[in-house]
Amino acid sequence: MHMTTRPLFLLAALLLSGAGHAADPGQRELLVFAASSLTNALTDVAAAYTRETGQAVRFSFAASAVGARQIEAGARADVFFSADVEWMDYVDARQLIDRRTRHDVVSNRLALIAPADSTVALRIEANFPLAAALGTGRLATGDPDYVPAGRYARSALTALGVWNNVADRIVRADNVRSALMFVARGEAPLGIVYQTDALAERKVRIVALFPAGSHPPITYPAAATLAAKPGAARFVEFLLGPVAREIFASHGFLNP
Picture 1 (cartoon, rainbow, N blue to C red):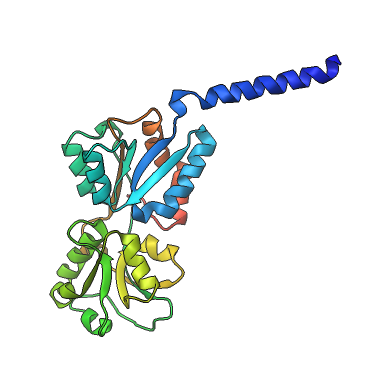
Picture 2: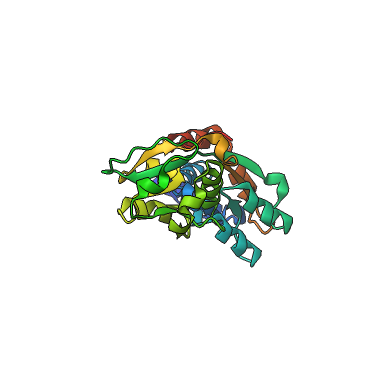
């Protein structure tokens, strides 16, 4: 009897210990507001973080402008992970993030994409024939007025001298993943998204990458908010570590 009850006692103790750990306020689930282009990579990073720390993470993926404005409106996000510096500056200027935790985490490239079965071929250079390549179709990208991918696209096309040729033919998607899907479904013959988005969708192919100097650097900063639960700063630090770096690289992201 003694030999059989002792293992049961130990098992009960372990279960009680685990239950107490789960109830620790420091282990409450984190809510991360993140750019849509981070969806695949960040989901994988969060799984690795949870395995290491025991703290669960859930996400609200949207255009960076949407996340920034929701935080400004009082949304209780713990971490903001933006697709550009400007929207992080926006929440920083309103004293909504802990600037001590702010770090540039990854960078990206801008890509011209087409449906996977498209035969279009273009070399991206000054005055390249983008409008002619569209035919009667339209160019899908994020809304240049507030979606970072769209702003980068407008900057690049302006620098290359072709923006005015296509400005009235833009499909202004509410985030970069929506722009990606317009092309994946064949609803737009061409689109401009991040390299990582193109790599994540087998129904599109990269026609060409934009020259890095044609647009501002595509930098993704992250920071804990001032209203964050315990663990938020640790999560941002995890984003900078070797495990997260390897995952980001596997999805096509670059070091900042």
